[in-house]
Structure formats: structure tokens, C-alpha cells
Image 1 (cartoon, helix red, strand yellow):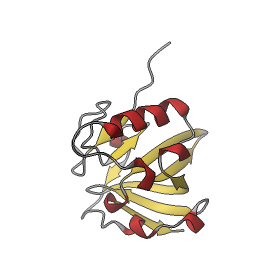
Image 2 (cartoon, one colour; image 1 turned 45 degrees about the vertical axis):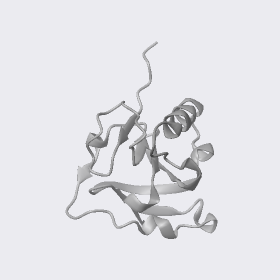
Image 3 (cartoon, rainbow, N blue to C red; image 1 turned 90 degrees about the horizontal axis):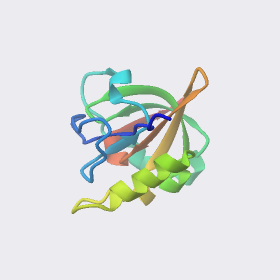
Image 4 (tube, rainbow, N blue to C red; image 1 turned 180 degrees about the vertical axis):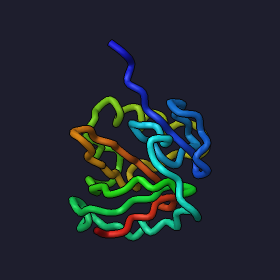
Length: 132
């Protein structure tokens, strides 16, 4: 059985895929190269998200910026990640080094596309989330 890959990137989109590091600004279950880059950079509007926004749809851009598209906010913190293996990998990777990920503050987005789920755990400061 093949090993499932997970991906992390720092705020400049350049941490190598499947190399979960403590400098990560986003953890994903698909490579960032699956999405299109756009001009400018994310301004951190996701910092304004609240518990009352859970279950709502947002147009999501992350990092420098990469347009993810329409996603549903499923919660905050790694415990909101539905995939147990991905959840544990994120929790472990976030504890390492001098720059912890602070997983309890992280908005978790899910994008459904042709029966597949893209899971995005991103530091809010590196994410724009526009209500849809």
C-alpha cells in the first residue's frame, strides 16, 4: 500500500512538498502546484473568522497568493481535520523547533472536488477568506 503524502509550505510557497517543517505556514493533503497563483499576496482576512463561521463557504487564497477556490470552514485547530493520519502528522510537525504552528488557532478548510477532499490547515495571517 503506497504511503499517503502530505505537504507543507512556508509563507513564500517554497518549503519542499512532503517535508513537514516547523516553519510551515500551511499543511495540505495535496501539492500546492495543483492550484493557480495570482497577483499580490494574502492579507490575512481569515484572522477575522469566528466560530459562527464554521460550516460557511469562503473563496480562499493562501500565501503568496495561491487561489484555492471555494472551501468550507470546518473548524479551528488540528482536531477539526477529518483525516486522522493527517491530523496527527500536523500535530507532531507543529511541536518541533522554535516556531510552533499554534494549531489551535488555525482555520481548517475543506474543498470538495469530484468526490475528493482537499484539506487545508493554514495560519490565518497567510489566508484570505472571502464569504460566498
